[in-house]
Length: 183
Image (cartoon, rainbow, N blue to C red; front, side):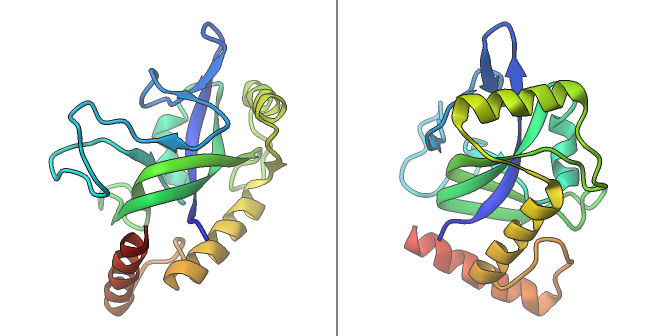
């Protein structure tokens, strides 16, 4: 079983493709996206001072900074391979998780906000375009959030939507290490 999480992706009308808002040079397609490293990180782990990898989060608020483009959408992602997970910054995302992985694949498109509101018309057009081009289903936020929570509980025995106790953090770190040993 692979881990589920979320990412923001934007449609670029000029280039006619789906791109990462944080790395506009990266084109998303229907396959597994593999991390690229210009510095040449090798093997399963990342160099300590390198920022390569694919960044995602199961937490909506952590995606907001990448959703500034009016045609960006949130998608459900599946993680492949080696993974780093750390808590969000205390100042603005204290209960969020940030993930950096070796590979990801788009599984579905999210068409509502956590409040249940349908995304803006321009974003809805982007969602429909991705659904058509990549043959991906469209789900409301609450459904994908539930999928992610069940998935995280089955793999790490935690919810990504609740603060962890000290003991839960220690157990989570051990389960993450076991995950990486198997990937």
